[in-house]
Length: 160
Image 1 (tube, rainbow, N blue to C red):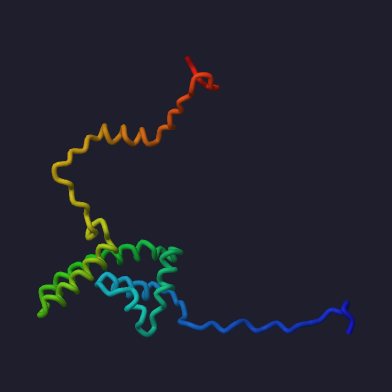
Image 2: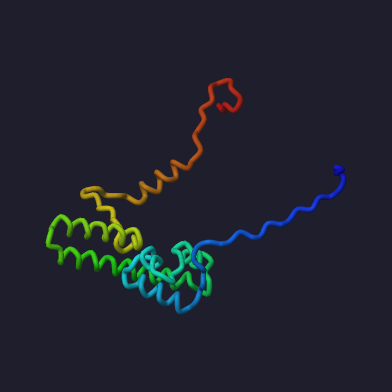
């Protein structure tokens, strides 16, 4: 065979997709958001048969598929409230103080990460420290100012 003759190659069949199908529907979204608002994690919801992978649900939110992003955000907020309430319920029902404390701390931490403006750690005010806003502003201005360069007599730029 000569080098100049074209050769034909068979195209490979497309790779077979594996994994769960991504079937978006308003009914499925309502189920997922309802369960999340009830305090169930997205990971546990997506483990159930017939549910999409959690990465697929997050992709729907990122792409804002059919307005899903806003519904997902509201469900997440409600989920944080439900988890925080569950932390208190779990601590009250605990028969072992150490396990009750562990459950409470874990749920409180998780709620704080999900909804930091409500359940996050708040910095404690320093007692006895008075902050003068004018002093703070001057310090910020001073930090942004260009450094003053001192020139020796006889150098270029020296003024007398």
